[in-house]
Amino acid sequence: MAGIGFDAEVVRGVSLRLKRRVGKLAYVISGVISLCRYRPQLLEVVTEAGVRRQAYGVIISNGRLYGGRFVVSPSASLYKKTLSVCLLLRKTRLGLLGTVAKIAAGRPLLIDEAVQLQARKVVVAGASVPVQVDGDYVGDLPQVFHSTFGEIQMVLPPWSDAPGINDEKEAYP
Image (tube, rainbow, N blue to C red; front, top):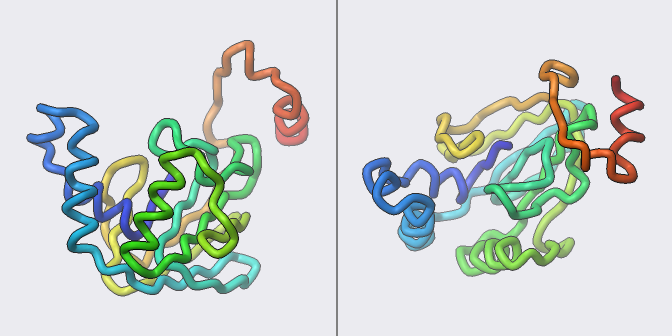
C-alpha cells in the first residue's frame, strides 16, 4: 500500500521517539499538526492504459485494508493482477478532513470525493509531494508503481475459503 499526499505527510512527520512512547497515538498527533500545515497539491496520475486523471491525494494498494482496519479500495484484492488506485478529489483541508473522517467511520467515499481505478502500472507526478509505503516515508514524487503478480507465496488461514476468494485464487495460480 502506498499513500501520496496528506497521509504521507503525516507519516513523514511522526516522531520515532514519540511513537516509542505512545504508539499509534503519535500518528494522530502528527495528523493534527500536518492538517494545520498541509496544502493539498494537484497530482497527475497516468496508468499503463493511458488513463490520465488529476487528484489531491492517491492511495495505491493490492489489499482492501488501509492502516490496519480502514477500507479505502473495496475492490482491491491480493488475488488480482492489478493495483487498486483511489484518487482523492477534495482539494481543501476541510474537504480532506471530511474524507479522512468518512474513512475512519467506515463509510464509503462518494464519487465527488474519490474515484477508483484498476491498473498494472501507475505513474504519479506532483511538485515535492511526499510518498509513504506501508507506513514508511520513502521520498517525494514523481514515483512509478507497478504490480508484479505471483512474486510472493502466501499462507492463508482456513477461513480464506470464503465465497469468491477461491474463484480468483484458481483464476491466477
